[in-house]
Image (cartoon, rainbow, N blue to C red; front, side, top):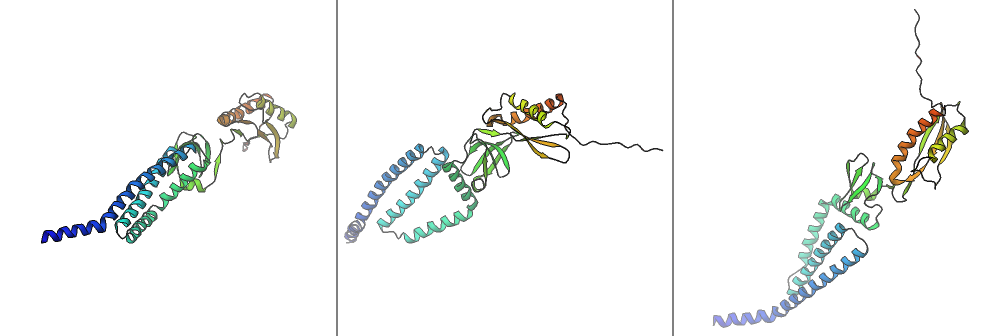
Length: 270
């Protein structure tokens, strides 16, 4: 008698839940196949769009987990499990994690924006957040620069994406801004010729755009000249230092005075 009851109960369970279980299994198999195809298609789109490899992996893993969680909820609902409370728990957990990782999520979002819109790329010389350096690595949460003195600079992507970025490498060339002062007894025309000769004789200074030498201001103790040569971005500092040194030498040879503070020693009698 007991056996018959158990058999009847088994039949009842199979009749009531069998179709649901079969449907759930079918949904899981089909859903897993669809997720796999979606991830494959998304990877192709990212590859064609030249997305960063680290960004691809992170976004694909994130998409995979989100889709799998949705699929699990659908499967559980098909079987008959109440999914409303389950979804609420997931939402609450997601909110708690989001609040705890608010700064990290901001840096992640900044990293995604940088990788998508590409205001900078590896090898660019940039100025951002009060730092100047060459972009060495763009990661999900931070960007690493190599400073001018070969120090490593790490900037959070949230601050980097929300602040001003000066990219010195975008155009490929840079103007070197220099100012030299000479004494008021100096001949302006001759001084401009001497300065221009320094610029035109330097092999790394570009002919186009042409360098310029102009009177910048009549200062308290000097006539200041704006010296503006152009160079390739990679040659900027070489031109800067060379022109500074060669200008001093050329002005000395031409007998043009570079004013500097003089101290007069007064001897007391007695």
